[in-house]
Amino acid sequence: MIKTMKNLAATIAIGALSAGTAVAADELAKDLTSTIALLGLPCGQVISAKRLGENDYLATCKDKNRYRVYVNAQGRVVAEKQ
Image (cartoon, rainbow, N blue to C red; front, top):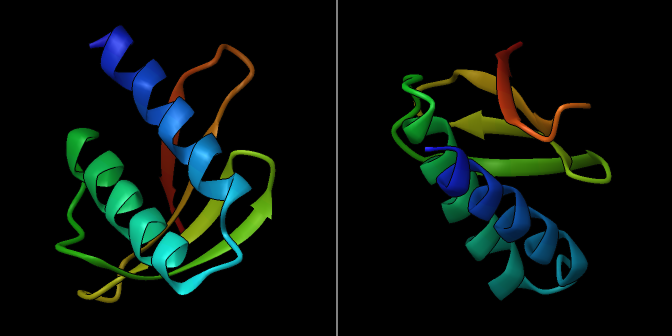
Protein backbone atom coordinates (compact mmCIF):
# COMPACT_ATOMS: atom_id res chain seq x y z
CA MET A 1 0.00 0.00 0.00
CA ILE A 2 2.81 2.43 0.85
CA LYS A 3 4.48 1.67 -2.49
CA THR A 4 1.18 2.37 -4.25
CA MET A 5 0.83 5.70 -2.46
CA LYS A 6 4.40 6.69 -3.42
CA ASN A 7 3.63 5.76 -7.03
CA LEU A 8 0.52 7.93 -6.89
CA ALA A 9 2.53 10.83 -5.51
CA ALA A 10 5.01 10.43 -8.36
CA THR A 11 2.16 10.28 -10.87
CA ILE A 12 0.64 13.46 -9.48
CA ALA A 13 4.04 15.17 -9.67
CA ILE A 14 4.51 14.08 -13.29
CA GLY A 15 1.03 15.30 -14.13
CA ALA A 16 1.83 18.67 -12.58
CA LEU A 17 4.91 19.06 -14.74
CA SER A 18 2.90 18.70 -17.92
CA ALA A 19 -0.30 20.44 -16.80
CA GLY A 20 -0.20 22.92 -19.69
CA THR A 21 -2.15 20.80 -22.18
CA ALA A 22 -5.69 19.45 -22.34
CA VAL A 23 -4.35 15.90 -22.51
CA ALA A 24 -2.36 16.46 -19.33
CA ALA A 25 -5.47 17.90 -17.66
CA ASP A 26 -7.43 14.75 -18.55
CA GLU A 27 -4.61 12.58 -17.22
CA LEU A 28 -4.45 14.61 -14.02
CA ALA A 29 -8.21 14.22 -13.52
CA LYS A 30 -7.88 10.45 -14.00
CA ASP A 31 -4.95 10.29 -11.58
CA LEU A 32 -6.84 12.28 -8.96
CA THR A 33 -9.95 10.11 -9.46
CA SER A 34 -7.85 7.00 -8.84
CA THR A 35 -6.11 8.53 -5.84
CA ILE A 36 -9.38 9.53 -4.19
CA ALA A 37 -10.88 6.08 -4.85
CA LEU A 38 -7.82 4.29 -3.42
CA LEU A 39 -8.18 6.37 -0.27
CA GLY A 40 -11.75 5.05 0.03
CA LEU A 41 -13.53 8.36 -0.47
CA PRO A 42 -16.66 8.90 -2.59
CA CYS A 43 -16.13 10.79 -5.82
CA GLY A 44 -17.06 8.88 -8.96
CA GLN A 45 -15.03 11.03 -11.36
CA VAL A 46 -12.97 14.20 -11.02
CA ILE A 47 -14.39 16.80 -13.42
CA SER A 48 -12.00 19.64 -12.59
CA ALA A 49 -8.72 20.11 -10.79
CA LYS A 50 -6.96 23.27 -9.68
CA ARG A 51 -3.29 23.26 -8.76
CA LEU A 52 -2.75 24.90 -5.37
CA GLY A 53 0.96 24.20 -5.09
CA GLU A 54 3.58 21.56 -5.67
CA ASN A 55 1.85 18.17 -5.28
CA ASP A 56 -1.26 19.99 -3.99
CA TYR A 57 -4.59 20.04 -5.86
CA LEU A 58 -8.23 20.91 -5.33
CA ALA A 59 -10.32 18.26 -7.08
CA THR A 60 -14.03 18.67 -7.81
CA CYS A 61 -15.95 15.45 -8.36
CA LYS A 62 -18.95 14.72 -10.54
CA ASP A 63 -20.98 14.04 -7.37
CA LYS A 64 -20.13 17.60 -6.14
CA ASN A 65 -17.65 16.44 -3.47
CA ARG A 66 -14.44 18.50 -3.35
CA TYR A 67 -11.13 17.28 -2.02
CA ARG A 68 -7.75 18.81 -1.40
CA VAL A 69 -5.30 16.12 -2.53
CA TYR A 70 -1.69 16.62 -1.49
CA VAL A 71 1.48 14.94 -0.25
CA ASN A 72 1.99 15.60 3.45
CA ALA A 73 5.29 16.12 5.32
CA GLN A 74 5.62 12.36 5.88
CA GLY A 75 5.39 11.75 2.12
CA ARG A 76 1.89 10.28 2.20
CA VAL A 77 -0.89 11.20 -0.20
CA VAL A 78 -3.82 12.72 1.69
CA ALA A 79 -7.28 13.77 0.51
CA GLU A 80 -9.24 16.15 2.76
CA LYS A 81 -12.90 16.86 2.08
CA GLN A 82 -13.49 20.58 1.52
